[in-house]
Image (cartoon, rainbow, N blue to C red; front, side, top):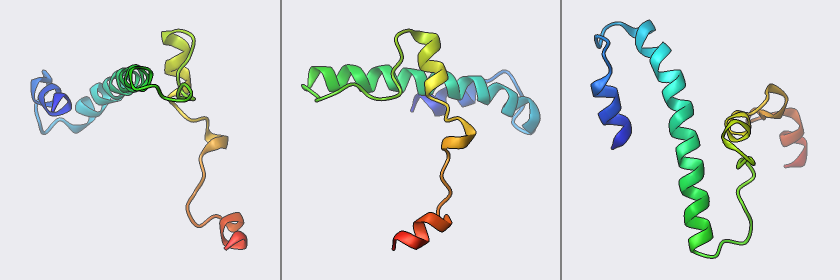
Length: 85
């Protein structure tokens, strides 16, 4: 719900796609980091076994971890996946 509300409150016309995309990129980082901390808090309250792997020691480290480096992205239907099946 918060994402839709923020999208409607953006100070850019709805047909200005490039400007909207430039605003959406930093907002997506902010929402991802907020989700990470909320998820970790809920896991701690519920007695989860271990911390989430994308949680850093501080805010800047968490921002760096929530984005996958290009070498870690796996494509569905990769040759290694086909050999295993």
